[in-house]
Image (cartoon, rainbow, N blue to C red):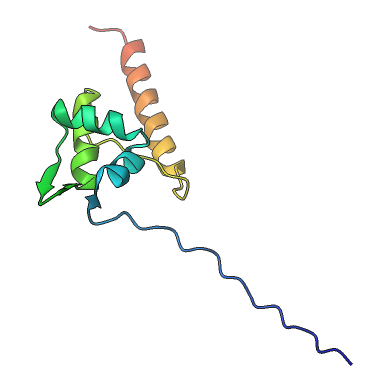
Length: 109
């Protein structure tokens, strides 16, 4: 008589938390969703990165603020990843767009 192998329950992968800091061009470029050469070019044009010994580091918050500033926004840009739920951001953007459209439709007195 053969023994039946018990199926182990597979846990869903834990969503990756935003890292405390990004170390190296590969991690920075992956966070930005751009090739390494683009991340290096942006660093030369003012993107906030720090040299720590022989490594380049950056904070996700600093990169988000930089991208928001470069896009002409007053708020940091939210960089999306595959694990993120973007519905809240979409609702906020739609609400903001609708509020702007209502202001344009109102006649000025």
